Length: 323
Image 1: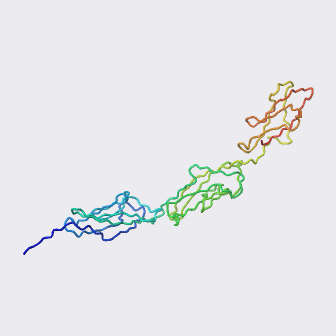
Image 2 (image 1 turned 60 degrees about the horizontal axis):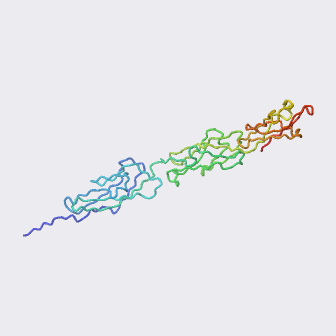
Image 3 (image 1 turned 90 degrees about the vertical axis):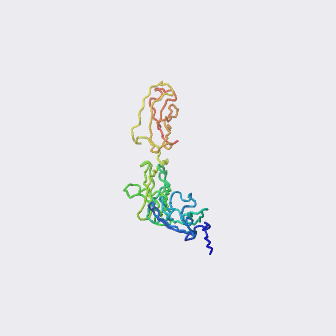
């Protein structure tokens, strides 16, 4: 009798129980949460039949998952998020035997990270940026666009968690009487004409909140500056029936000497507040002149020789006007 012992040769790679694996894991699951378990067997004998597991391409993992080499258990190793991603993550998993030469087989694990745990995506304002200023002309018509606010939510915009609504806080300030914000688009417009002389700027608190549960919201400040419009004519700080302003000057006074000044005011600002002056009556001989100084005053000067014997009193009518 001849007995022939066939020695096993490591000629068979491990075989997975499934051609591919799928798993769903909620976002923000604690580290160590079990995602899936892969399983493979090897038909060889002895050490060649012992199977261990690893990731075929560690760069796919980004440190988010770990695998137990002896059991094939794959668990989380970082905080996962499914926001803004519809496609699953694909991870290649390898089963290796302990033979010589070593044999292996790869399979794929499809992991979907579900944005299902809770409404934890907080809205964020894109516009206005911190410290940004908007401008609107005074007396602008009702409905004039002031600013286009824009915010985003990391949750799916097609769900309540990602749907944003814009508003002003109900804080009892005058803002809601003067401005309105479209809850859907975020466009801020005027409700009444604004007067810069009454108030030059306003601080608006903008809010963006989602419709999820619990509600998430954020806020941002916007400064609105009311731009000046030249809507106020200059005027003297005197009534029309006031006693004329009296000035005394000696005859034979040097030419071009200052003999007095008049002051007018304009409620506008900047270039709109510049005032010019002119003598419109009582100066037929051109004896007097008037010009504006750097403080917006009308400086009256002597342009020709004065002779009291020819005229001891001069009555001038002075006009203030915008240049």
